[in-house]
Image 1: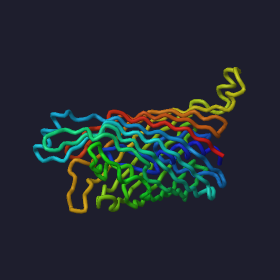
Image 2: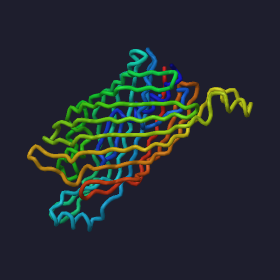
Image 3: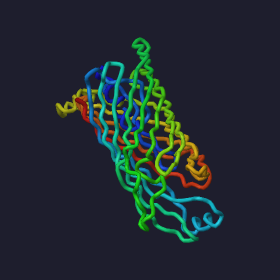
Image 4: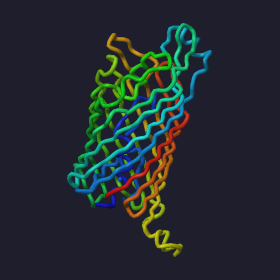
Length: 333
């Protein structure tokens, strides 16, 4: 059972929360087999095993020029920009049974370089910074076919309105709901994950749907669908490098995985309590994300994923992300 820990832990902490396509995404992960970083695998933690994880998620966005923002404002288009989104977070998880794992994740959101337009004048509104919403998550494995190395699990969660909802711009105005660290809404999540192991290769796929409800400022930020596919290869198993090099006893406890993922998300257009639908938010975004992971002694895990947008079919007037970087360190107990 411990063999699946690395695969589960890293994905758990990357995917238990989801944001919209315009502002990037957040989120569950698993030791001994190769596995993904962002895609949620079907493996669960062994009973009684727990972990803590520190994660950083950074997205850099292309931005509009001031001239373009003014031009769009003259056409009465509601457009605003965010230059960078940086979200460090802490997560914990616990195996209630061999087939049921629970956990939570608490992010701290840094939204840098927000720009908007008022009366044909571009204003640098500043940065929106604060504690984000906690996401509670559960994963129940309903299929465990060891003969075929096939696993499947149900995913469920709840994002609770625990984050900051009253951050203000430099001019004292309240940032809009979609720019706040917390949404103020109770958002349930449900999904499914499937995993298949083929020797040193692991195949994983998952889908996760978030139902958005009305939150701060009377806004509904829109439902989100997250879908992922990953192939992972265990390049170095515990002891392989040691056997070849005879260099150091520590190498007996090291493993190294190469990972390639397609990480997609679709998000709905948000609307306010007054019925205004923001035509310049939401849409479809797909990242191609190569990455790697080191594991030491099946207890310490470090991973890095680099997401490059290959599909960006976004609604209205939006600028696509340039790059997304996700890195984390995990300790299992």
